[in-house]
Image 1 (tube, rainbow, N blue to C red):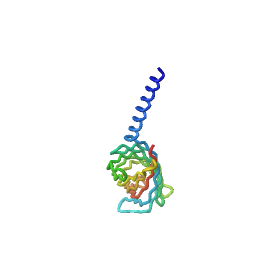
Image 2: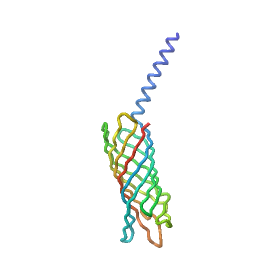
Image 3: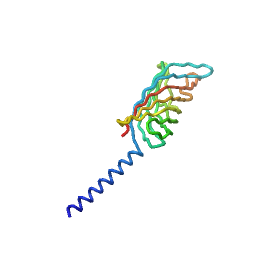
Length: 179
């Protein structure tokens, strides 16, 4: 009688552990950090002002075989401009074993910021496009993304009738811990 229960428990354990391993292969949640360097341009009425820019951020997302979806927070600093961004991103990737090229788009919001220390940046919609490659680290549960990104936001503030647009372009390194 005891052998019957032991066999049933063993069979259930094997089946459930196999299902969990399969689910992990198709549905990989992750957390990550980003760091980037590039440039930013504020332009309005034939006036373009460009600066070097840096950004730092965090991401949380889901990686499935052909697509990846993530929520992103970014803090961007370009000379006198500082802003906080929240984005929702979607990526399409080539399902190759170790190196995966991808293309992505994102939509979100600049929810806080300032220009020149005294002009508040309005809460405005922001759009971005990304092109990059993911390197899977075989021994560790870590993925490394190297990507180029372009971010655009229109009418970031209204200062004496001037409503400039914002364009940021950067090279970004993203390190993701895959659960």
